[in-house]
Length: 169
Length: 169
DNA sequence: AATTTTATGTCAGTCTTGTTGACTTTCCAA
DNA sequence: TTGGAAAGTCAACAAGACTGACATAAAATT
Image: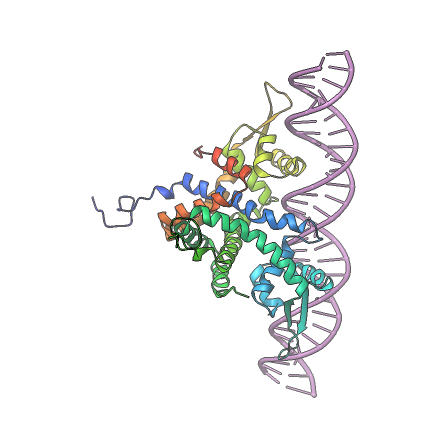
């Protein structure tokens, strides 16, 4: 029997690709995503905000001065949907919108001190769970986790993800 | 210096627990979940169904004869929310609801042939992406992926996940 | 200079999916 | 047998996504 090829008789064990294994992975994603959003959701209940607001705050903190269009591409929603969220965040003084210097059509978005405060609370809650999971699973598992997630993204989203290299404020 | 404990001076490298690494993981979850749902969503556009219908079909296929209450616990929504979804699936002949023999308050849920057909199309689309991601990342990465996801779940959801051991129909 | 394209914002209406509250039927136990 | 708990249903509402149409301003192109 040929042993060199990538077929089912290859040296690599392909049991992890059975439909049942894939189904397990699908269910793991489903249940884990619920945990992933649970802590910020609990905080947001105390405000008139939802997950959409959290996402906007996250990516504005991540890329201060980003334009509405950039944010649209990252979040993958319509401008009407994003606009509703941004309007409330701006009205409530969490986000500042500055007209572009070079291109006055653009609006550059920044967190105010108040906005940065809420963003920090939300992301700290989310990081706390992530940190516990990472610590439980260990560094090798974390590397695998990230590899699989990255391979699961739509190509366009993978580009967005990869271009967000530096996360430090 | 003490080297045995789990502190920052332990033999284990803890760089993977920095806030930036955690943030990367958070963003990976966000972008990957979009990919995860993209393919079934595209199929569902052709029907009057959404993600909620997909989830119901998935878990009914997984546990044929399950009750509404069981499904409620797994899906983590209110019974009213689930009921709307189930009603349309039953009306459209995708799901059959049988009154419990022992306890007539209960309804036992089953997929019809039609329901099994749609469930298969949806989950096959989802598995196709999962399979590609698993193949790209390799078995070690997949093991890590599952470990981290499992550690990320709420305890109650982890129990649900673990009790769904056998996925074969 | 006139025209087109781009970036943003807004209004109106729809859909999915979550919520709470009130209700019926059924079961079980005091 | 009566009263509470459990399972499920119906009605109304809210968040947050969507589409489509339209407005404005500025930039880019012709």
